[in-house]
Amino acid sequence: MRLYDIETKNMWFDEVYSWKLSQKTAVEIIEDTSGDIHPPLYYIVLKYWTGFFSDSVLSMRLLSVLPGLLSLIFVYKISRLLFKADEPVIFVMLLYAVSPVNLFYSQEIRMLNLNLFLTLGSVYYFLLSLKDNSVKYLILFVLFSFTAVYTHYFSLLILFTAFVILIFKLISKQNTFRELRGKFAAIIIVNILYIPWYPVFFSQISKGQPWRKVNSLQDTGHNFLNYFKDNFLSVYKEFEPIHIQYLSAFVSFFILAYLLYCLFRFLNSDEKVMSDFNYIIMFFYLPLLIALIISFKQNIILSRYLSIIIPYMIITIIFFSSMLFKRKVQILLFLFLFCVSSIGVYINYNNNFKNNDYRKVISYIEENYNNNNNNIIIVEPHYMGWVIEYHTKHSETKLPVPEIFGWDLKMQLDSLNNRKDIDKFWLILDYSSLGNEDYSSAEKVLNQMGFKKSQEKTFYVIPAKVSAGYYVRNDP
Image 1 (cartoon, rainbow, N blue to C red):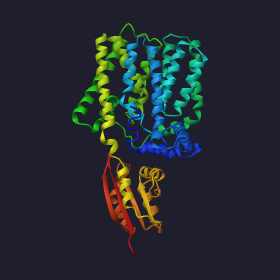
Image 2: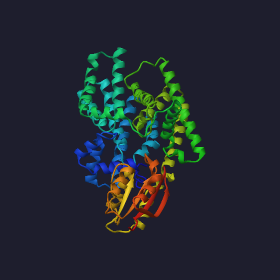
Image 3: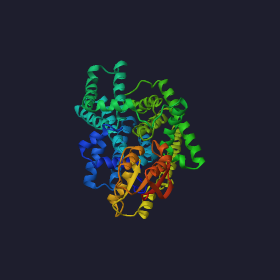
Image 4: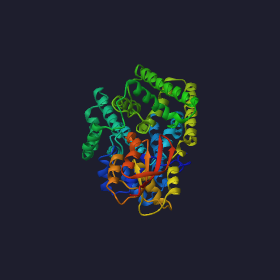
């Protein structure tokens, strides 16, 4: 399923950005990511991966398929720590295998599945170290945690949860500090290794992201429910018929109510004293709670960011069902979630979203392109430029690599005004970009600069339209 139809979906902004960044040197990648919203390790791995296996769409997406498959090993091992019987382990593995979100991100050129694999390894060896003070487990915990936090910032939520578990065990006197000092030392070592990147991390979280707004209580609640909808009914659910949207709403309310009810019962039962492996559920609840609190300022409850806690959510659901309910209820719950997830998988592979893409924009320009030295392509934002650049590298085409005159439309037009050697050009405007309010005046500004639009076509693609206009300088 992770390989099926893997090349059909067009590369979207984040994927093309990953490719573009991987074309640079390792030093340049570190420099660029210091101003981005993610750490550099994935892009460096992608650079050497493409150097060895090529930068085809299939090759680059295989870098997500592989850790997605390897993650199954850790999901199995972690489940085995918690469950003694085979049946709940099988339930967890089957639900994870058909997780629509995990399948979706197994086919994206992003760091999410690599981060998932690394955090699962981190959690597994942390849990083993709680029972066994073996130095080997602590070294592996440090290795997986260190690489995870340099792959994605949300790995810090997993590391923080491990720290909270140690504090809880110490305060509740389940263990002495002497018994736990090796684990505390391992977490301190990971933080020491992260010191070079902490200034970048704090700088980025302090300035936030301009496309994320302050959320109301209603907005946060909506995003919170959307997270569960994505997990079981696919990220494409909103482009499906109304009955699928009703189903996704029901499932999200059901899962949320189930998780809250079971947690309440668990904490008020005789089993509330946590065993070492029961702490697995904290790797779901605590990161989700922290993300919920942060989201009142900027929404981060997104399936792509919190995909790393999906295994613990599934394990938690099965853990509570096996602990609090009869076997018939356990089986019914599993079958219900398996069927819902299977519908989500179907949506993943049959929704037309992935085919409603930018390749038709490129085809149109290619068909109408007049190849001469003064005929260039200008793109706003640069995503479309990177897409065309990738196309020129991998296809026989007469299109040139697009010109970059600035980082927004105003800068592009100001620079164009100073270029008297340019007489003809294509201007591509993607209305899904930030700052598209200036697009309506672009033609007027270009007319004042002496250019006239001789050809234009608008493409209605998801999530917004794209216009491709051909401009020619007027004769003096």
